[in-house]
Length: 339
Image 1 (cartoon, rainbow, N blue to C red):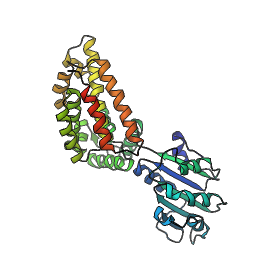
Image 2 (image 1 turned 90 degrees about the vertical axis):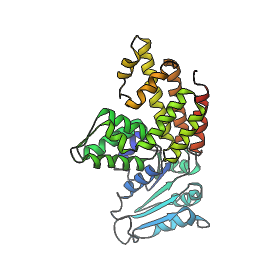
Image 3 (image 1 turned 60 degrees about the vertical axis):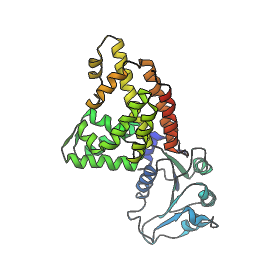
Image 4 (image 1 turned 180 degrees about the vertical axis):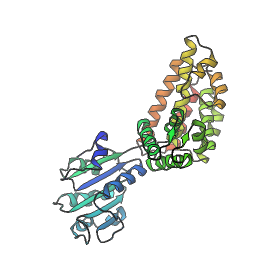
């Protein structure tokens, strides 16, 4: 059974009675771990209970294809379920999962975390086509997911975040669910129960150095400055900025550039066009944007936004060198920047 994205939340709280095994797969390791743990707690309050919970890894499957099936046969000392937690890359788990799913599974739940798979992988197809198993994809959050996550966490502490603050959170986070959740929780802790967060609070809390490096990348990209782009990318990697965060930062910059350019084409001055943007650009970026408005037409800027969205999807697909893909893709845009 393949669980669609819109069905995942409900499945993780009320799975069908016939489901005895679930595969969590994708390129967001934090989300895989979070969802697997949440699901496992439906069947055991204590996942460290060695008498009812068995933990297996992919390395243990070498020459032991029956290991998962054998583990499901053990009678739990406490509780109603034997929980079998399996973690690996994917391919090395396939034969063991086939054997385990080939027999009836009573009072047992198998939870598999596979970190190096695609939707076409054989182990994914195995779980999707089984009547007693389910497959759940775990891929980097989109803008709506991050906004919903932040809103949920802030609501728990009655923290009020401005729209501009939420926009910055959405722009800067999203490549890994666990990392995003941790950063948003830090923001909630910083604000305190019943507190408030504005755009500047978020910029500072999420790390000025990495954000400034991303701003420099967007500036070099729009300027067609190859040398500055390479330097800014090196700085961003040094500051541990992730590739998706960089690409999203550039998307925001060019989207603002396109909207302001369109407003100017309708008769507004450059300053008024920039003031009309929501969220408003940081004051440090306004001079850069105003300079770029002289060379970027609205259609050219939005074409870059579309290209950057394609790059983001490519990064989320997994199986590639994120830094190399980002550098090569941005270089191509930089070389075609209007002079």
